[in-house]
Image 1 (cartoon, rainbow, N blue to C red):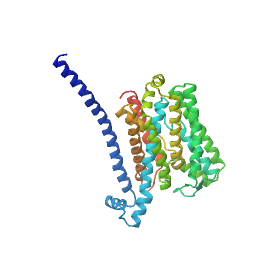
Image 2: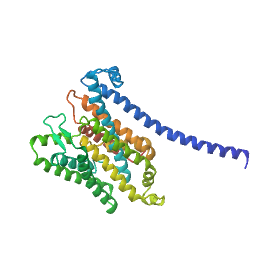
Image 3: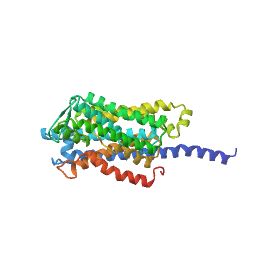
Image 4: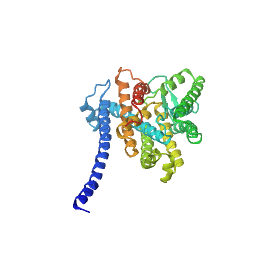
Length: 364
């Protein structure tokens, strides 16, 4: 081997890790930018509102130097709402990202497959029929959860009923992605009808409260609720990130994944189980919030591709940003009237998702 050939091989060997570092560095930079925007938006969300707070007052209150009025506004009202929006957005977006991979369906998400509607039915049943929640006559705090564990378990059962049907259609019957979405529409209608039947036998105040609750509302989350949601979402995120290589293998096809030693059936079953648990917990506390689990992964997939080493944390960051932005818009758009955040996410999500479809899902 000549000296020129040795130098050429050395240059190639050195260029591979350098290009790979640039490749991963760009993706990490995009994730960090989304996190930075989310942090800036969180500061604005805490500051925005009818109380007329200044950024300096918010900062001093967060550091424990504000008066009693500022402490109540920031620590009891604004900060739990902001953190709950981020936690819920992270959970829904990560659940949607994993569902899209496990079902090989780009349209899969907790809301499009009927999982959210099944969880809402279970939660409504626990609140009205099992006495797990107290019904208020005002729009503020329309439903107060007295027994969050019973509501969560009931919501989880409803979510799992939908998940079992979806897994049966995907794995046993081998339906197409389009047919799976149609099945999700049918399941959504079924559980919506079941929730309507429950409301039919409820009082007027209960019906109004449950309808308001199903709109999706971040403001009802307390510090206790936030702790439960953060624990479930955090543990699920760690599990999903641990299985990132398995999801990458499944992207190449089931036979390829099995050839690489991945137990596809077990990974799919446990992954859908965890995604349903996230959905059940969030729906039981916040109501139905659509489109976040669909849009977060799609937006970041256009920037980062399908590598789940980066797509999972990127989807989490984008989901938190989207829901926090939607909730902030709901509070400030026609203040002092606060709109349901579920309506805002639907208004924002439907046009953006149609745009993504028009641009083409597979083109990156």
